Length: 404
Image (cartoon, rainbow, N blue to C red; front, side, top):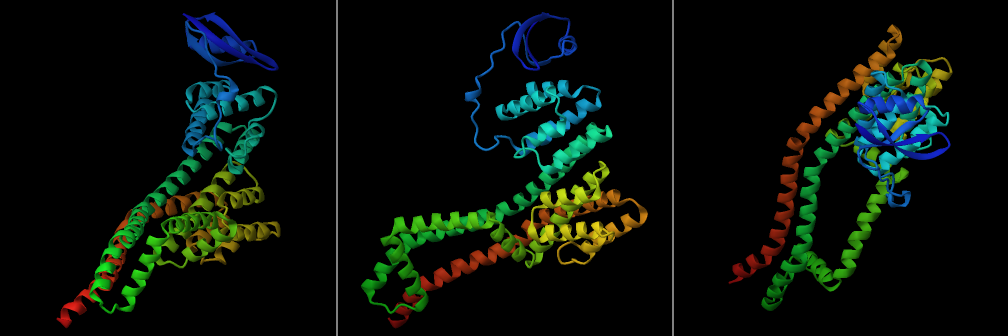
């Protein structure tokens, strides 16, 4: 069959050529022997590539799940014996995301020019984390790149699944609280003014709670635009505050004192720390480098401080587990004990892997039960909200009827 092939070679513009071959794989082999890679291939038609300026995206334009899938596919192809350049070329043609496709081309170009994979990945720090780059480097140095990529792919997948479950557990209470907030505003703007007019015409003396609600309603009706602007500013301010280093640390510290959520937070960070350390150590990354990278991945000052202490202890010749044992309010006791056992038996990475699996499963189960725990609390909150409003609005009417 005849195939229109776009070939890329080092320091040479892309070349389109029609090649007759029995299979597509025969084309790949033919081009590789010539020192090039296949970047486009179609049967009987000319490949049309969009100009670079049409591929405009905001941010990276690449989803985390796409990076996970690409990593697992790359590991699988390398395990099957394909060369790195050929595997990247196949992935480039498989993906539909233009940003990811362009990224694969850039990584492939860097490798064709003599760079190693981890050096090519390091040019894209917004897409590939320090963990990913370190794992790729360790895999290249040890000659087990496929295994290292498989490990980092699994680690990213587990972390992604854990975060999705936590976010999913928060959706229900978030929707309910948002609905209550919106209903409250609508009642203050549309319902309360009607009742206020009735109270004014009857000359009823209003209780304190009713006067507060009426005053708030009058202000909102008279300054709708101002109120909506304040709400938007407050929401924006809260988002920026939570995402800032100081605000995030403050919220995290406060969350640790909430009964159910605090335990979830501790176990989530324990799972992330253990999984990252286990992945790095099992790939042959030195302990000190592994701890430094884990601190970057965890990215929470409270928990990173413990990891930094562990790094300092190891530098001084101490035990890795000591820092975790000394901070049971941040990392669960099991984390420190499992590390200590791992150091005694010489199987630290294995113990960390087991710890990560335990806490990942535990967090998964607790997030399933989270809605069951939160539901009665939300019902009580809604009941209190409706009760206060009802009493404040009905009390004057009841007083009037009692007077008659």
